Image (cartoon, rainbow, N blue to C red; front, side):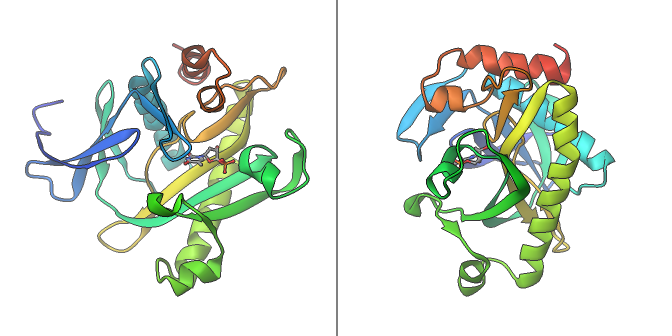
Length: 241
Ligand code: TMP
């Protein structure tokens, strides 16, 4: 923490992060990254060594990079190893998943084998609601529930596709295939949609370019071993440390 940003109150604790209000900055929040890891709607729980620090550093780096490429996002400033200041957004309760290679839940919806290169990226919407287990929804579900407008959905899809176009070559240059990833968005006080949340090995599938070794949270989800090492390897490839 720097003197300029004094935490007042924790307003949210999720599975991997906490949010705090800040003294004298009503349009900002402090986002703290935890070492805690969960999977399958928190049925499985654990910790990953230095995950809070690694995910904070990676999100700082990637959101700064995306901003340079014109992607509006909530990142303001990293203020400690595992804390960052972000714009306060009104979260759109939709998780946007982009897929380049078949893996994970796509294998239950299609006959694609794991590793199949998709002819075109797939964009999916999930309703962010733990009590329902974050079900996949269509545009019409989102409109019927009034959680987004037609225009919002178009923006979410366009921004997600644009982020994919930017990040795919970014990761590939660092020896990582961007298999799929999850994004969250929110609206700022003027109503503009911005990218929020995080981009980390918790929210992306990243495979080694040559060996297809999984270097992401799937190692934790499916007890593949070498979880801490995978996070450290991604940190090294992206941040060089
Ligand atoms: P899925 O294949 O399980 O649907 O996951 C797609 C991507 O979304 C994958 O990169 C992991 C990420 N993800 C999250 O970030 N949070 C979640 O709760 C889930 C289920 C997936």
